[in-house]
Image (cartoon, rainbow, N blue to C red; front, side, top):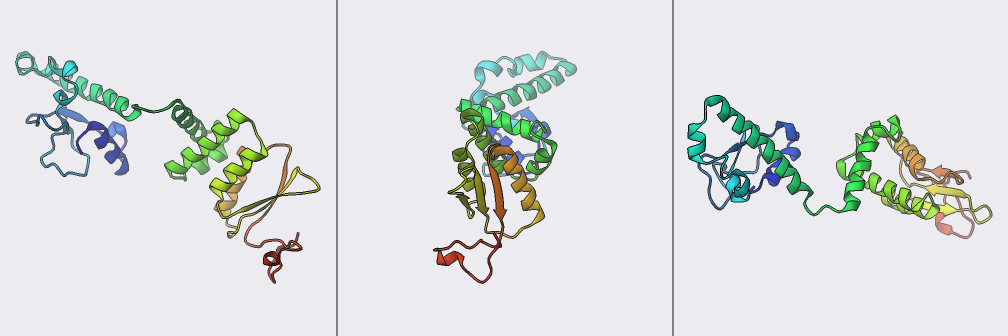
Length: 234
C-alpha cells in the first residue's frame, strides 16, 4: 500500500467502515511514500491509526499546518485539534481520490443502488439486495438505470434476463406476442424464487404476461432436445 485510497479499499475488504479509519501525521515519513508504515509490504489497514506523509502529495495544504516550528508553539489542546483536523482533511482527500475519474453514469448507478437499499423501490427488494455482493447490487442498479432511460421494453427485459439468469431461455409466443415463457434451468429454491419475483417487478413491462419453468423444460414439437421423458406440463 502506498496511497490513502489504497488503505481505504483494503480496510473495506477487511470489513471495516470508513469511520473506523484514522489518519495521523507520520513522524518519520519517507519522501518516496505516502503511507509511512513500519514495513513496505504491509497489506492490512488498521485498526491502529494510519501514519501518512501528507507532504508527499498535499504539501500545499499541510506544509504550514505540519511545520515543526508551528506545532512546537501550540498548546496541547490545539495539538489535538490539528490531529482531528488532519484526520478529517485526509478523509475528504481520500474521497476525492476514490471518485477521481468517475463518470456521470457511475454516479447515477451508485445513487440508484443507495435508493434500492433504502427501500425506495420496495422493502422486499431492499431486504433481498442487502444479501447480494456489491457487484451484483451495482449490476441491478445499472440495468434499472437503463430501463429508466430507455423505458420498459421487451428488449431491456431480455438484456437484464441474460445478465442475471445466464442459463435461462426466454421464449415469446408467436400467436400472442405479449405472452412470454421462461425456462431457468435451475432448481426451484425459495431464495431464488424471491430473486426472480424481484427481477420481474423491476424489469418486466406491465403489458406482458409471463410463465416460468424452473428445472424441467416444456416440450416443443420439432425440437428433439425438448421431447424427453421428464418434461414440464405446458
